[in-house]
Image 1 (tube, helix red, strand yellow):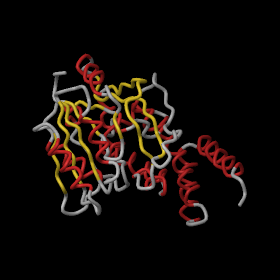
Image 2 (cartoon, rainbow, N blue to C red):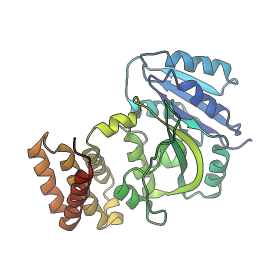
Image 3 (cartoon, rainbow, N blue to C red):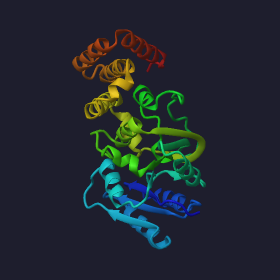
Length: 307
């Protein structure tokens, strides 16, 4: 089907086992105006060679492959791909995930029909790579609420691989894919920034399969202090765009209180002085919310089976 050009950005790193299927799931879409830009971030395996084989087998002009000569990280890889993209709309798929048939056309139609929508996202299935079994995944959020507030309150509930984004919306504030210093949070900062000026529209269609395996960026993310990373990213966001504070209202301090307490819970015994400082900061932000979060962490700890 013809229409505006969609540029699909694929960041690849050590996904020799998966990248071929990821590419096929993009190129098999029933939408003709599509280009796939795959960038290998200096993989240690044969991912780059596999991607090049896929490009040579694809219709002329449909797929481009670039290989970094040194590892730059997910944000820089996506940013590089964006500079090479020619489309009015931008899709994202990491090289270990899969799009389902028919993902793009309804999303293109939605963005064409509703110019105040900067990003559309959708449902997805998460599955264990080794067994194929479905894995519960995702964050609940309020569809009827201000989506900027929800992104601060709930965290990054938008699954990147399900999105289709208006290129003009990405460029409006010049953030793009910017490294936050924490793995894979460049998309979170982008989504927050888009929500300042545009609607984020969700559709309940399942459009993607999200592969869970030990090499996931998400696995790296979960191993760290996510709450501390969110605190730093949200601080950066409001410094860049102080007008966001008015929209966030009282939810800003509540969110900070919860995150400081969660950061303290993560530090725990490993760094008790830092944990104590974080807990104090949480109470200063919003005492009631901080104490509720302390109670939640306490209940969760008590519910864990003893070793």
